[in-house]
Image 1 (cartoon, helix red, strand yellow):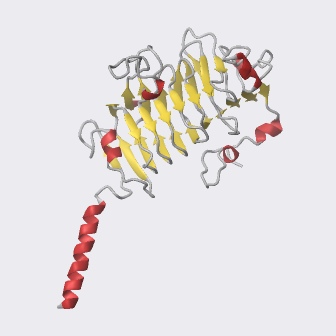
Image 2 (tube, rainbow, N blue to C red):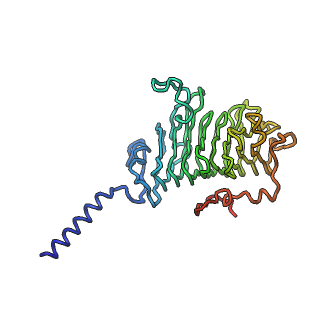
Image 3 (cartoon, rainbow, N blue to C red):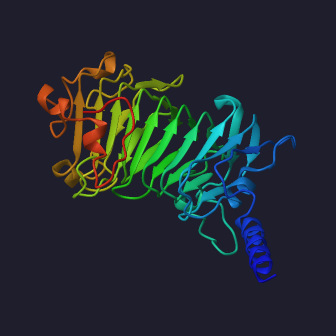
Amino acid sequence: MKYFIIVLTALLAVNVGAEAAGKYDNPDTLVVARDGTGEFRTVDEAIEVCRAFMDYHKVIFVKRGTYKEKLIIPQWLQHIEICGEDRDNTIITYDDHANIKTPERPGGMGTFRTYTLRIDGNDITLKNITIENNAARLGQAVALHTQGDRLTFINCRFLGNQDTVYTGMGDTRLYFEDCYIEGTTDFIFGPSTAWFERCTIHCKSNSYITAASTPREVPFGYIFNQCTVTVADGVTKVYLGRPWRDYGYTLFMHCNLPAQIRPEGWHHWEQHREQTARYMEFENSGPGADNTNRVSWSRQLTKKEAKDITTAKVFSRNDAWSVGAVKE
């Protein structure tokens, strides 16, 4: 009898533990669909059920549709992949901009609250999806705001105007492959280390593509490799970048640059930043690649220097993270 009671108690404990674990605490895919054919109707609902500090890969599959949501992937979530069914027709969108006034913020909400998607967690992946800030051109309006490390974006679109993509944390690593990024002014900006591989960078106005604020002690900032820069109708004068802070780092290599790139290539933002800006190019093509009249404080890499610019070296830390096609 005593043995029976012990066994029964153990079985009850297992059942209670299984229930407490929660039905979503496993590697299964979560399906989101606006039309009700998935487990969730919003992406936020799917994010909410993910367990903190997961050690397995969790996929949130988002069916075609437009999802008007303002999302945060919090710091305690990791190893999540948000995958759209169709890049151009799976859209997460919102419309905040910096000059929206509220009783709490009569001066406007400011740039850094305008995001459509903010990623605070590490080891997050986005695939085949569009992230959009469709606010009117009334101020800065961020579509993607990143804070986490080891973030990967494959075949995604990032749509907006001023300040579309904000890489918001110094010395974090981001990898963009086969993505489309559009905007007007400083539409890729911030202090992170970010590699852009075979991306299309679309300029919607006469302005600046990048505004890096790479910290002085961080060896790499923005690297565009085998990317294509395009411009909208009516655009005639585009700078590759200007340093938002001292020591901003930006490199364009093996990229196709249109005729609308200004001959000088780069702007100092403030005169003294000519002394610290780290602005480089290597073997670009297209009419905008002519470096004859580039500013004297930018430079062309040598072949030996360029050979050392690989994802393995750029992303090297005390971990085993490795991404992309350009490795040692």
